[in-house]
Image (cartoon, helix red, strand yellow):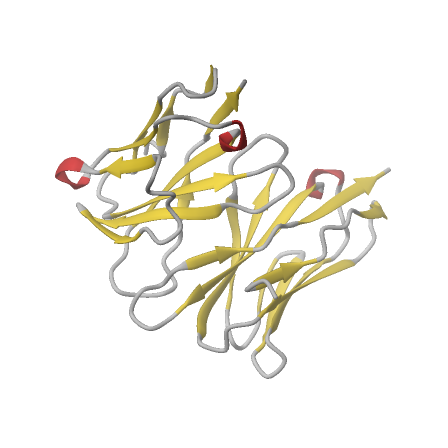
Length: 111
Length: 116
């Protein structure tokens, strides 16, 4: 089993739709969690960190479920510009915070 | 503020040839990462530096890959000799780690390597 797993998609949704992605992780010692966005042929960029209490940034909401070992990303009112690959990142603890990326979930928002 | 700088942006070489990639992190960032990203996959960590010290290189294929970060600033990743399977995007990232696991990584644009 991979340490961080994501459904590669693609998720194909119309503008204005709400879409949600999950990311599961296998290491219960994981300490921190992030969502990155990667546009085609570009570098990954931080979208948001994921906090235990959940957090929201505009149309984006991230949640962490430690008991079931997954994080989620919810996008409301999808825009064409949201089309990208969304990468889940999990950092292990233990004094050396090794980041592990999922393979990413592809989102296509169409008119 | 300047971001992470990488060069070259593209490289095409024949197999068995050597190749080197250069990265200059964001000024003041003490931690530097090299990743390899294959098509349709997420970045895979090759090596992580804290200042000059390589603190995690378990994923670096040491028979052909080497890296250095002299003076704790810029870094070079080398492949010698290159194999067809090394074709990928090589990403450099940096972060200002102050002991918190929430530190953000900032990525450079990557070097796209094609081995023929």
